[in-house]
Amino acid sequence: MITFFLNDQPVRTAEPAASALLDFVRYHEHLMGTKIGCREGDCEACTVLVGELSADGQRVVYQSMTSCLTPLGNAHGKHVVTVEGINRAGGQLTPVQRAIVDAGGAQCGFCTVGFVMSLTGHGLSGRAPSEKSALAAIDGNICRCTGSHEKAREAGARPHGRHAHDRQAPPVFVRLQNRIE
Ligand code: FES
Ligand code: FES
Picture 1: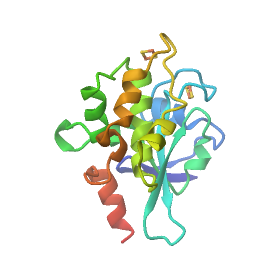
Picture 2: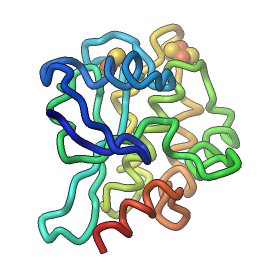
Picture 3: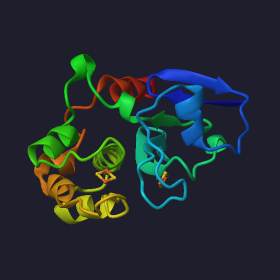
C-alpha cells in the first residue's frame, strides 16, 4: 500500500507503484491542473512539488519534479503538491502567479502550470533565492508551440517570482509544517 499526502488530503492506494504519478493525480484523483505534454521529461508541463522531511526531521523540503517520470511508489511517505494545492483560501494568486501575471508571462494552460510549479518549487527549496537560480529553475520548462517564454523568464527574475512562498505560505504548507513541529 502506498500512502502519502496529496495537497491537504491523506492518500492510501494500491495502484501499481510503477505507474506514473502524473496519471494518478489526473485520472485517479481527478486533479486535472497538472498537464500532460511530452510524457518524456522534456517539457515540464507535468511539474508537481514533492516534499519530504529534512535529515533533522524538523521541516519539509520541497523540490519540483516531472510527474510523468516519477513512479507513484516514489511518493510514499511524502507530500505531493499539485497546482490545485498552492493557492490560499479565496483563490488569491500566489506571489509566483502574481509575478507571472504582472510580467505578462501567462501563456497557455499547459506550459504556464509548469512554470508556476517550477518557480514555486524553487522558492520552497530552502536555497538562497537569486535571479540566476530562479532562471535555472525554469530552464527545462518549454513552450512546445512557439518556443517563446521570455515573459515567464522575466517573471522568474522578479523578486516575487524568486521568493515564492517563503513569507506567505498557503495553508496546505503551513498545516503540514505544523504537524511535524
Ligand atoms: S509531460 Fe512530463 S515533462 Fe513533458
Ligand atoms: S505550450 Fe503553452 S504557449 Fe506554447
